[in-house]
Length: 396
Image 1 (cartoon, rainbow, N blue to C red):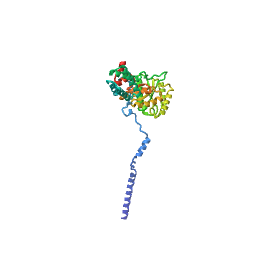
Image 2 (image 1 turned 135 degrees about the horizontal axis):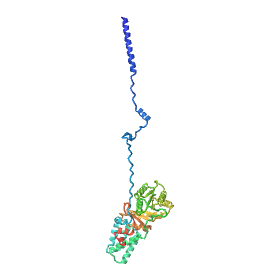
Image 3 (image 1 turned 60 degrees about the vertical axis):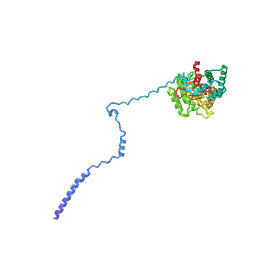
Image 4 (image 1 turned 45 degrees about the vertical axis):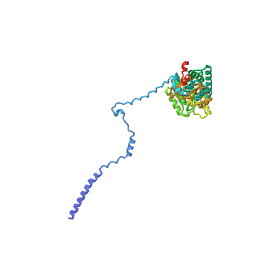
C-alpha cells in the first residue's frame, strides 16, 4: 500500500514538472511592451533628420508651375505746377486789404473831413506811426502831403487820397531794383543765401521762393544748411520734392558750411540755374552769427560769388524785427528782404520802415499760408491794396 502511494506521488510530480516546462518558455517569449516615446526623443529625431524638405508648389497641387504675382511699382509722384508770379499781388489784394482798418478806413476817413486842421494832421501822423511806418518816415510823408495840399489849394477827398497814395509810393522808392538774380554764368549757378531768425517762417519761405523760381522757369536745387534742426531739412526736402527740386542735406549737427559747399557743387554738376541755401537762424549772439554766416559765405565763394542774400523778416514783429534785421545786415551783405505774414496785420507800413531803416528793397511779400501766396513786391499795387484805391490802374 505504501508502495502504491509513493508511485502515485512520483507520477504526479512528473506531470507537474512537465507542465511547467511547457508553460514557462512561452511566458518568456511574450514580446515586451514598447517603451513610450518621450518629447526629448522626438526632438532629437527631428534634429537628426534635418529640416523637412517641401515639395515644389507645382508637385503639391496640379503640377502646373505657379508664378509669383508681379511687383507693381508705385506711381511716380505728380509734380505740382506753381502759379505764375505775374499778377499774384493783385490776386491777393483782398488779403492785403485787411490792413485797411488803419490805412484805408483810418487815413482816408481823416482826409475826407471838410477841414484839415492841426488836430487832423496829428491824427494822420498817429495813424501812420501806429501802422509801423516809423516816426521819421511818417513826418516826411505828412510834411510833404501838407505842403502839396497847401500849394494846390482846397482839394476834394478823392484828390487828397490820390496825393496820399503818391506819397506812400514815393516813400517805398519805386526805383529800387526788386528783381532776384537767379541766373548764373559760365557754368556756375546763381547762389541765393537765405538768412533770418527762427520763427519768421524762414524755411517755409525758402521753399516758397523755390516755387517762385520754378514758376518763372528756373531750375532749382536746395541746400539744407540749417543742420541744427533735422525738421528744417525734412521740411525743405518736402517743399523741393513737390516741384521736382533736389535737396542736398547732411546729418543732423553737420557743418553748415560743408552742406552749403556740397549743394553748390551739386548744382554745378547738374547744371541747374539757381542754388537756394537755407541757413540756421538759431543764433544767440552777434558773434556766433558772424562766425557761422561768415564761414558759410567764405566756403561757398570758393565756387563763385553769392548772387543774393535774402533776409526773411516777420511783418508782425514790427519795429522789434528791425533790430534783429539790422544785426544780419551788419554781418552779411543783405541784398533783399522777404516780408512774411503781411496778411491780416494792420501794420502794412512796416514795408516803408524796413526800406528806410535798412536801405534794402523788399523783393517779395508773403500774404497767406498757401504754397503760392508769396508775391513779387510792387509799390504801386501794394499801396492800392492798402488804401483801396486804383492809382496803379490809372497809372497803367
